[in-house]
Structures are given as structure tokens and as C-alpha cells.
Image 1 (tube, one colour):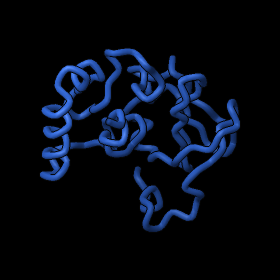
Image 2 (cartoon, rainbow, N blue to C red):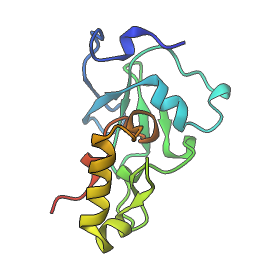
Image 3 (cartoon, helix red, strand yellow):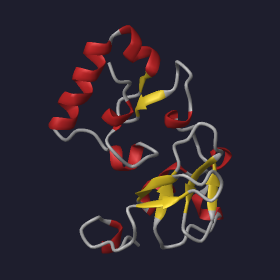
Image 4 (cartoon, helix red, strand yellow):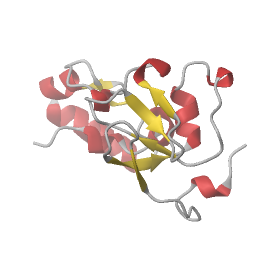
Length: 141
């Protein structure tokens, strides 16, 4: 059951929290996003509280909460592209755009994703492990 307080409009939890492993601050992500990325989420205890997304490639933690409960890369269905530098890492989860796709056709891929975002045909909140628009994960030109 989803609660109103998972949205930013009524959530009083901090927008960022410190990863219990690397000590750096990371943004909040919805429980719904986390549930969609975990392997067999019915077999783990995903408590109704605020979760955060660690995007550091040097840290195995992907999701954590303020009680130091963590989910690691191995707990997810796919490896988050944000934690990788590989050419085949995913940049856009809604349309399966990889870093290699972007490198070979930067204007076409990014324009396509921008157009789809503007027309609301994307679903980044769920499909992207970070729970945010995938455009933030595209390399800066």
C-alpha cells in the first residue's frame, strides 16, 4: 500500500541521507521504485519508510534507509547504470538507451528521450533505479 508521504509534497523526511557504507549524502527514492528493482521483493522486508539511492560506483550499496538497512547491487534484478562506467550501462531505462547508443548517436538518442519526456511517455520514477528522470544520467557534452 502506497502512502501519500512517499511524494515530496507531504514528506517531512530529509531529501538526502548519508550512505551507511561510504558516508556520502544521497537523494531519496520511493519505496515503489525500490520494490520494482529488487529480486524477489516478497522475500525481503522492505519497510514503509524513506529510502535513499547511492549512485557511487565504488559502493555496493544501492538503496538504504536511516536505520542502516541496505540493499546491495547483488539484490537487484539489474545493475544500475549509475554505478558503472561500462559502454553497455543503461542511461535511459524507459527506452533502453545505453551509453554506447548515446556515444554513437548522441543527438538522436538524447532528442528522442527529451521528446518522450515532454510527451509523458516515460516512466522514470519506476523504471530508473534512481527514481528520477533519466536525462540526468546522460553524459555532459
